[in-house]
Length: 181
Ligand code: SF4
Ligand code: SF4
Image (tube, helix red, strand yellow):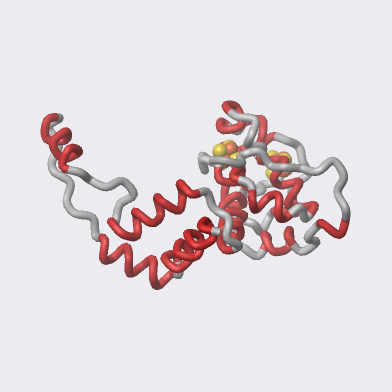
């Protein structure tokens, strides 16, 4: 990931803020409780991702979202670092659904053309092959040597159909076009 640190200007001008950003997030599933956050930091304190990198700070992302610092949040790869372990959701005294909130922010980011290349590649492989990793002959031989049964073919046609009906395939096409710019 190229840009995991969120860039924050020392001086913020009100004209650079997006006052409706927080409201927009609350309209997405998982984002509804955003306004309940009072910045206690319990989420960041227990976050296993935050323990191994300074690039991921859920409390900071939430604060920036509340302030309307939209472009910096959506264009940062930091929002994609959450591992959805739900530790923070167990601990938040305000019952903010932080893991789901990150998913809501990611959904907005993707719709606006922001997503890490690696995620788009994985999603494309899922749509085309029915699985994220391709199952090669080598994989099958290793499974056999370990006494594991051969993997049956993934239902690629079903996955592709679901991706088309839900708009996921079109979204990935859009993100691939964005990446070329
Ligand atoms: S634990 Fe909850 S209230 Fe505290 S900073 Fe995180 S989201 Fe906000
Ligand atoms: S769900 Fe995400 S933000 Fe919450 S503790 Fe796990 S990795 Fe950190």
